Image (cartoon, rainbow, N blue to C red; front, side, top):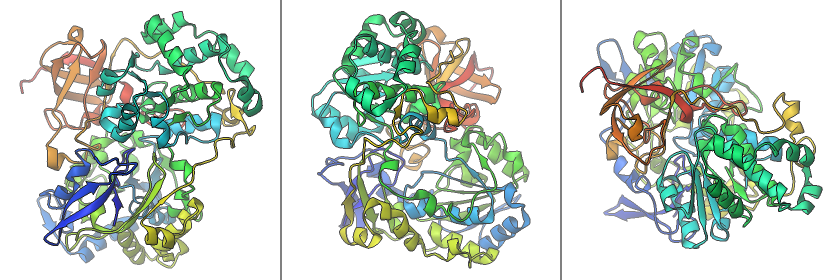
Length: 624
């Protein structure tokens, strides 16, 4: 038996469960591709979490003075009463990729779409870059994993050595040259053959400058451009202003380093475009521009962003969007700011109080009684601590599901390998029981068995659910790289697709503010967003700043959204004007760091620009 990790992570490790004394003892990473015989600190810790003291074991109801353990029936009566009493447009469900299983994440949204509640736009992670790249390519999928061992690699806006360890291993084991482009000196930057440090929000300038040099030196693939692309002449004219002098002035990349990066691209590397790019100023435009370098090189499989759209899985069907739609869609970065629009918030597979910009406002609204907050979760987290109704869920090790990867092309049938707490109920069972209590269980969306829905959703992969169950793991076919579902049917250097949507046809650059500090959030090797703190403890409430920006060992980071207080460490590897907080956590007073995070949506996929959060940095007035 094999099973796949369901974390929001590129690698989607595949394990073999190891039992001792009839109980699950550990997860053994398979030695074959793609897991290569090793896993990360998080993948190794999941078995420990089964007995975590933070497990939710029974339904809880929280009142003004006490929290009570109650029966499932009592908890669901309370929840269904709150849902019935609210206008559907004033109910919002918040869910994301805490577990990437098709049944765990996607299917439960059917109930809420059927009820006509509000939904988020699922934009917090990859949407901005994905939608931006589609404006030119009609798709955002790209290189298959094997390519990372065959060619030089550029890791752009991604600390692969920390958060994409198998992709990093493939690149390094092949001994091909590696370049890295980032705002801070990450582990990847320090290990790269060609590290390129760029000012926050200026990646698009660097990418367009590379394209200009490729065109100027006639190093582009004229045959591919002629046959498969549209708008090359307009693009060529547009990028002419992105001269090496202009690139250096805007990005801070020395001209010699810039020319080295241009030469690196002439070797036809794979570019891994990190999701972080979409969370920055001009991030969607940067993703557009980076992807177009590969159109010039005649290399349509040369970049990788996310391969979720390559496998043929019908995620919309799982969510029931073929028969029902949400009453309104709210950008994830603005849910906290717009919490007054809602009376009921239902959460699964996410910890929005800690992870969303201004997520602390969700907790504050719940504490005031302005909203009913309900959460279905395996573990007590900040959202559960603030919730009126807390419902116990199994972990991915305790239930069957189907797991895909947004990197590699293996689809996995996960079988339960451990027993959940006796009162833990999986997500599909819960929403179907709620549907009965709300009088909508006869609707086709709820009448369809969840596994039947999965069978329909995976048919586009070329496999049935029955085949997947029998085989455990199947390898999906490589996608077509020469079909482009754009307005012209070609790769659009000048995007007619964008014009039809009222968007700019070419990647845009708006100079970012340089009068304020930029707070950014590189990943930690110990946490997946807010998960695993029950194993590894809380991230330290501390930031790193350049010595020139150091104003004391405790600083207040302040902007229009709020204020957080953190310890500060001077670090010459941090660029001037940048403030680095690793991971997602809380400040010295217990306030979520994301209380000050920028929730402004990007123009293409709506991802908040939280990695270019502008703050003032001042010494703390209080002692800690």
